[in-house]
Image (cartoon, rainbow, N blue to C red):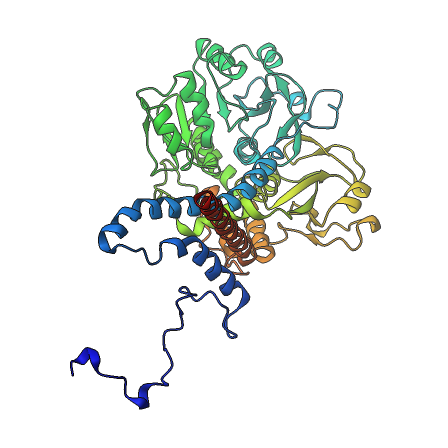
Length: 514
């Protein structure tokens, strides 16, 4: 008897098939009791997608012919799966981005600002340029404070038109002067012109670039760009053939759009004669300190650095930095921007005497590139507040407004750390980020770590070019809740893909039968 004719021994006849995938269920889609519901759902969808090509007839040649179709279906499934979280993320990020610079609801207070009233013709003059459509608070306010704290300059904020300027996050600033008023005040161009990130695309012939052209034609002002404010100088043609730096994220596009500029990314600023370009956000403090050194001396710059509690001042030279690059941990910022659709409403109490950098830390720290919160700037009585060095800020509400709208309150300012809040705000949690000594951003980053997670806090610090090795960031390690939202959206996308494949296959089979 040949081996083919040998009957199965009786003792083996009842041995069960150890393969759990039966012919009518080749992918094991029937749920086993021990499997979780989510695992079962995913396996069923994968089975729906792949079942048609699981065991193609006709041998290797047939399988080879079917491979392009299988690959195409796999690509389509991947596309549909990813499309669901993308479809949720895009409108969420778009809406959050639109809230960064919103039209100020308040009115300009009458009269001249305190800074203009104190003009001293014997001093050099420095100005921080603002865009009427919006300006980044962390680019504009810290350099302003550095210049004012040095005690060596008349310092003004200027804008094309003298009307309220929205800073990032909803902080409305009264510019000291418009361009025409500044031209009447000074016999020539200012000694220092600081150009921060300005909302809107800079272009030759725009009001700001046209004004800069006139200042350079009338003298030799020292230009200081902060972060992607370098794009304005590059668009004007001031950086062609010269070394320059900018925000490490912005450099990705700037190298392509302005190839004639010698972009570098390993220093906090580049001093190239009549132009100083600063790297990301808080590197603007270093670039401005360099401008103070050149005009008023290192002693004045040292006083300013100590006044703003900047720990990275490098007298006489630009500090070297390790060129930053996007890393896997930075995806915490993307998760926050894309899937934090339940952002908290954060009341920010403006008080007289708060420093400009303390305000910048709050309005930049909780908003741009992370979108952690929706800030509401308010004062207790709804009246404007004046910062330590004379800037005027118009609130968008009072204590009663905040009590009915916000989830938490942030009270920036060292002096305000002991302020007693009114009864109207009883029951609203309050955080005072500047109650402990340190740089203005420290308390905000510590709060972000506690309230959200340390990965997001580190991303915020990285996005503003601020080293945080000295901070003990305590909180959850990762935004697990947001990660779960992404996972659920991917599962929904996979389910949708499987359903579509199933419906298309049924439609095809019906057509074949007909």
